[in-house]
Amino acid sequence: MNQTEILTKIIRGRRSMFPPMYSDAKIAEEDIELILENANWAPNHKLTEPWRFHVMTGDKLQQMSVWAGEWYKKNVTGDKYSPVKHKKIMSNPLKSSHVIAICMRPAPDSGLPEWEEVAALSMAVQNMWLTAASLGIGSYWSSPGYIRDAGELLDLSEGERCLGWFYMGMPQPGASPQSKRTPIGEKVTWYK
Ligand SMILES: Cc1cc2nc3c(=O)[nH]c(=O)nc-3n(C[C@H](O)[C@H](O)[C@H](O)COP(=O)(O)O)c2cc1C
Image 1: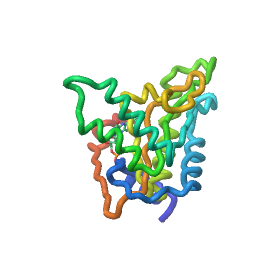
Image 2: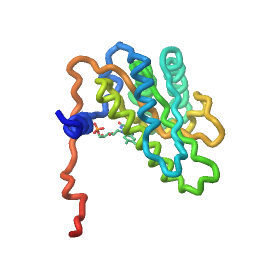
Image 3: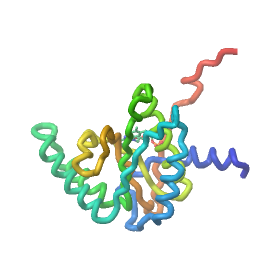
């Protein structure tokens, strides 16, 4: 396969893989390091490198589970409360090998609109996701409401904000999530 064929295969083969699909196996730390290093090579306007990552594994995932469960119990009440959702929020970290908090710290005084920093962070996450896929690691970007209070769990720096969790684990044998897209032709206008 040439480079384009390899890249296309990874892009098309990347899927969202959820914690119930993960096995108990732990991801090698060198793979996590590679994923983070590749994230760091994302394009970003004015080289602000706004992405910040907090890598959680081991005991910290236990802590995340308890914290998320408490948050849900306290903030989601009445008709909105779902025991199934409550259980899922608590079990997802425990089923994961690692969870990386996807955060950003917009550069002060850069003059950039915030959307450009969010876009740069998102490009970094795509690098992570594709690298994970190429390594056979299951992962997905989760953006729950309680992420806004991630500072209760993590040491965030001044001005830093989290936009999601990147759940990661080694897929169970046979896990093969499907996805679909409508044709690209419906979203493109050509001018010749
Ligand atoms: C910014 C962002 C936030 C997402 N948040 C969630 C989420 O909270 N819950 C979820 O199930 N999937 C979430 N996803 C994953 C999408 O559901 C998933 O990418 C989509 O279903 C397409 O599937 P695929 O990634 O396998 O192609 C998110 C994806 C992105 C890019």
